[in-house]
Length: 414
Image (cartoon, rainbow, N blue to C red; front, top):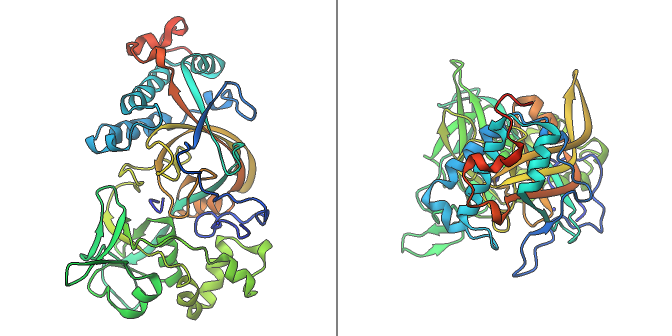
């Protein structure tokens, strides 16, 4: 996270690798940049092709919790610097979340809730990678590893804290490295950092496997189980400022594993049997992540906790931070011990940034923590459409209770 993850290769195989169910069609460039001066969102009518709120209005698990986290972020003065987004002001974004939260608290569900949303909210669709709304959805998760705060015979591979000479802006953009003479220069890439030993003394904790370290880097955070059983969070602090580069294409090209078998589990197993190759392949990705310790849930780039299936990561240079979104795609779900990919329509909050998530044609879905979430993330690689919801201008001055209008029937309405 906060990192938060380009056309032939498979984007990133669901973040470490992006989901690799099938090769990306060569003619589709999901990372196609947005033309200068254009917005990633355009207003569309409701209903729109491929968009149906009905199912999402029945399944609202954790939506209120995710909205509360976005409102907490938007309540910070620093959030105002990223607005307006087009004609959407900061106050408009806040009012939209507050109004949607009021609807959830009213008890309205299903088609009644859908009707109010359609009446009160404008819908904006991502232009996607092709100006037709095509967005590639991949998944990411928080892995859980065994580790130690001290280097031991078992735990030899460090995660590092942010070095003192790294310079970044208030919103996290890395400017480079401050030299002894006071000048700024690009921070070294992964291979140089690992070979030079220049990070010695900034070790934060140690893991037992070098590829686990790389997974933590790509995911942007990890839960670490200490020898006494305590679970701590190695959360994102910064990067070295380099762009993420997938190692998957090279693994396939070199014949290390066939494309049809490429997934996170296969990569983990391969590098466990070939630990001498880890540094060579991971060194092809110049991006390096620094961490900080915590004890709460994983946080996204808004410095708010992320919520499984309700937090998405997008390119924050072109999408509005913290706002309410709607996904229409296919996602894998674990059902009775099996993973089945099904149509998914659901609300989410745009609360994180992906290191490889660039341009309007990409969206990363947070799948949760642990091995099952990792399995789902590793199988998420589907096209779909991404929408955002904002309160219609004429309702911006309404008192919260008035947002329901004639639809309000009391908090027990189902």
